[in-house]
Image (cartoon, rainbow, N blue to C red; front, side, top):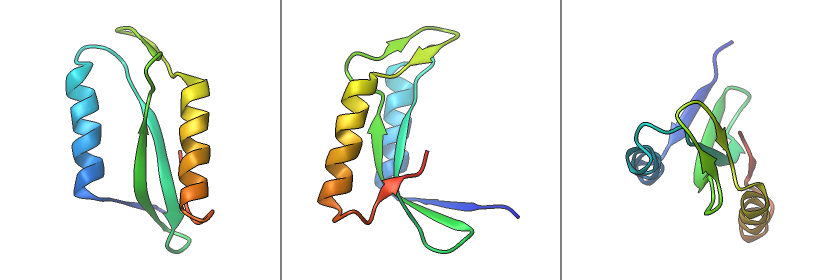
Length: 86
């Protein structure tokens, strides 16, 4: 069974901007949102790698403390509806 991931235009723009900003380096982030049903995830927020993330041409390490705080903040602001998707 294949899953479908729905991204808002704002989320796509944010992902594109992050990739462009760190061109030629690995980067990443986290998706927050909810499952609309057993096959469709809805991304409501993209949490970037964080200000102290380490990037190179072959590896990436997020600023984990910053990301965990941002994830917890978004979870609380969403009244615990949006969760970590990946």
